[in-house]
Amino acid sequence: MIHGDEAGVAEDTLNRIKKGAFLTVKSGNGVNTMTIGWAAFGFVWNKPVMMVAVRSSRHTFGIIETARDFTVTVPLEDLRKELAFCGSQSGRDVDKFKACSLETISGRQVGSPVIKTRGRQYECAIIYKTPMDPVHLDRQYESSFYPQKDYHTLYFGEILACYETE
Image (tube, rainbow, N blue to C red):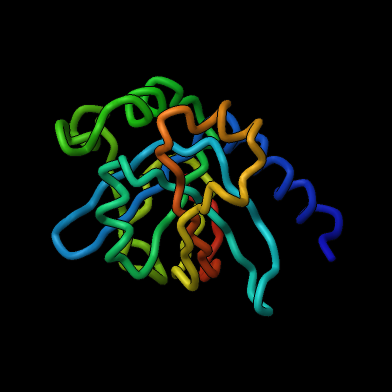
């Protein structure tokens, strides 16, 4: 059960993710960051877990599919411009890190880096992934979120580290 300060941090994190956070993934020589506005936290298989969703059409999808982990950086400062850019441009076409002057630092527990900013960092080891099956999706959501049939794959990551950076 979440108590006091932990509940406040969790609620604050979810509210901030709705406004945008950076999902960063590294596999081999590939590294990319993208903006996410959705995530879920829970306790699954006796582990603290964060679930993120990536569409197969995204450049990040090709990297996360071969990755063992991912990080989520939830900014605690105003990075709206950078989040907007990283959510609208593809890493296939542009180096988002250079274009937005975003620096990375090594993760403490995982191979994927975190964004160097004042923020809340989540380092997650991928423990399960599953592509969405539209047969099981409410039709209202399908027409609202998937008119092009570009469904997400859901990645469940065991949270190995959670900390704030300055």
